[in-house]
Image 1 (cartoon, rainbow, N blue to C red):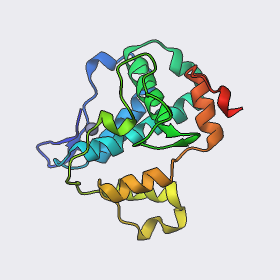
Image 2: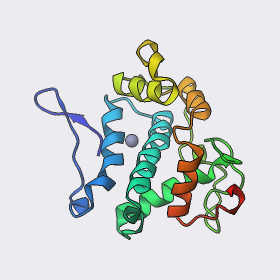
Image 3: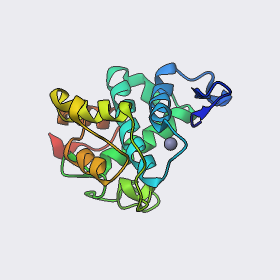
Length: 185
Ligand SMILES: [Zn+2]
């Protein structure tokens, strides 16, 4: 759940007890997400950006340890579904957020693209040093110290241009999720 200030003014992240038996690697996308919230301000644009990013963290976890995707637990199934939506929200092999080759939940509820899951508000929210570092690493590590990054349309545009995973990683994650990747070979 979101990090909230404790009595010392520091922020705690509480993990729901129902996930106490989950593999810690499945918790890592959640910790990543909650650390980035950073303050009491949040909103749809911040949620869209964080889910766009935490799905990539999950992708990296299953690429290195594929059996995590087949654990069958609640957390696995949620994260598999979000990553499937993220991978399906693309033009050809390029991950996007606002477009897709086809509905992102095949044979399921119609959702046109990933961003439709988190309808954007008009106002962004302040970023933080962790977001700056992550966006810098996705773009160009040499420029990360000079970057600013807020949860806003500029960062969404950067996510659009810098998908964070190489094509072979996207295909690998899709294979692990048992998605149809015939068109990529
Ligand atoms: Zn959140």
